[in-house]
Length: 157
Image 1 (cartoon, rainbow, N blue to C red):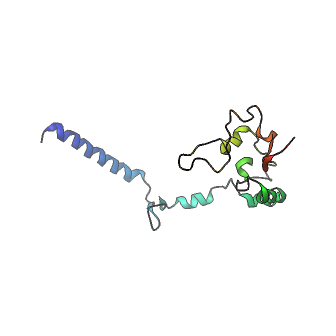
Image 2 (image 1 turned 90 degrees about the horizontal axis):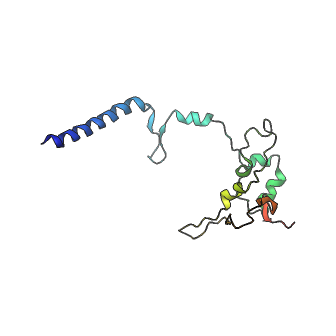
Image 3 (image 1 turned 90 degrees about the vertical axis):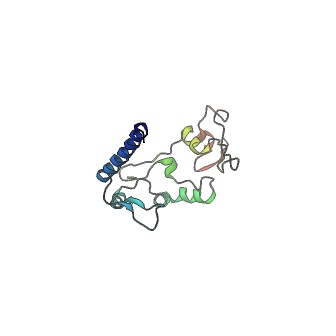
């Protein structure tokens, strides 16, 4: 074979060898398949305990219901936001009420548009969440001036 063919071939083999040698030094010994399939079981085994020890920030609706039973009951019963977790708008509940005394709801227009911006999906046409066109719907007002976040149906003022 000619050298113009062999040089790139040797270079490719050298790069592959360098990658395999580097992998031996950089990848931990306990990294691999730890379960019946490759789907979700390819991980570092010692990482499991690290994730168990990681502090939880989002505590869920049940935690909120311990003190805010009335709001949670009203939300679950009749609100269009019944499927939305409290912490999506109020922020993470970790440390509440001991360290953080209040979790005020984020009432900014941008917060509401995280879910309610009008998005056209190609498969089914529209999202199941009612969307608004931001530049056309009461542009200079915050959403909470007309809507109660715990029960977003129109409130007449």
